[in-house]
Length: 166
Ligand code: SAM
Image (cartoon, rainbow, N blue to C red; front, side, top):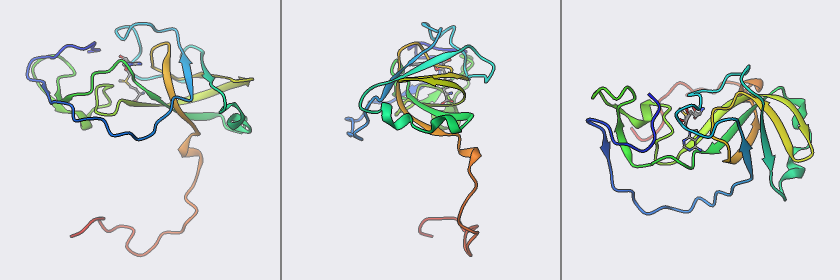
């Protein structure tokens, strides 16, 4: 069930710690048909409506060669989200799940990602299909879809071991 900013039965919020500055910058703005979270799709579809991504200067030059790729990963900042819930009730029925087991926009760092179909580039505007964010959502990054790349390094002994001190 799509949400705005309400707290639902059995959900748990925490006091937000002070922000650490990761140095993020908004490199553009996403234009979509959706102006309300309640009508915005939960996940984009590659046959969804045409959306445009406006890239700000000085980053327009960074679009060079992007048209080599048919699919892009789009990373954006879900700027209207609350960020303080650790347990959430997606169905609003009193049952709750941990935030990190969900793709909810409500998360401590509300980064959204979509795989989008690249339709074309005109100047500073990238046309895509496959997004699920509100009109005006700030853009964090564009990358070629990771599934178009294969690992360069051969498998190494120990690749299957669990990392970290143990
Ligand atoms: N595809 C992304 C992902 O998996 O990381 C986002 C998925 S999230 C479930 C999509 C929902 O986020 C939309 O249905 C809408 O309710 C909400 N949303 C979209 N744009 C937003 C924004 N700018 N701020 C807050 N919430 C937003």
